[in-house]
Length: 432
Image (cartoon, rainbow, N blue to C red; front, side, top):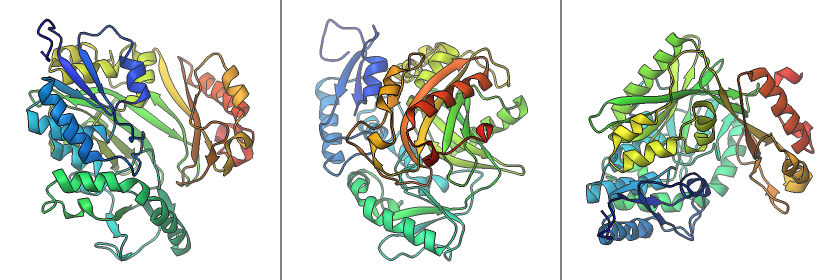
């Protein structure tokens, strides 16, 4: 295994590793040899214009061959695309590029989903919609970016034109690496919009709750469920996130329905030996898929550790190493019921303001908090700029316990200490 004849450990190539990857994997005594394959021009979570995704993929391919790599490990939406090419080319364990592309490209993913809203694309060169006449309200989002970047709900022509002016200015900063990659490795006769400058547009939904089913596909094609989590939003059209919580507290029948929908979506995408998650809107009369992701929600690793005393990173590592029995062994001790012993919550600190970060964030307070680690997304000297309807995330943190209302109260205390201008942030109903 690998080029070291004395080693019996599988060699895994960690593609475009993040700080979180290193934090969760780097310090462990693992039965794997991890090869950290970086690129100095790559920025997480959105690749910058200097990142050459094709060059990186070919360099990684050469490394797989020369170092006799046994599997590839990825935790985010850029690395999984590279992984799909390497898996196909070198016959490694894992999903092929096509289902990964289908999940990452939200327009084509919609074409392979059950339970979809109306959706279309906008040609950014002409401003024309692909199939429908322009209509409002509508929800705009890029076809392949993450973390709600450049996503907007628009209710009329004025809001639409304002949002599109930001899109036309900001989107080209991110799309170049993807378009080059799709042109090199994706069948553009089959998927002609892959290399075009487009935006997604779809039906905005009302009166819903959102949930995420996370799981994996074993080598026999059997779909396994890891957990279901709840997305808890502030009130209002902005769709600003309050917190994510796991496990879900939905009734058993409701959770089983979500599992059925997610299973259908993963089968339609064609995933093999892969982690995945499916986000679903639950409405009074129907269910609508938010999106399908061809990788784990690695950002929820702390939730799984705190709620279930297990690691999704271990799960993806074992699956990449072609050891699905070990993945099964670290699955959460969980059933789709509303009962739980410990709940994990991931809270976000959001502002709708713009300007110097130090005008909005009390950095000294954030450093003083001792009952949770505050992850800051800005530092003194940074500029806060709004690029989505749902606000700017300045920080996030985790709380655990068996009393959800008490965790909400503590989260509100922490946020009130961090935010210097709370009037610029969403306020939960519990405080009004």
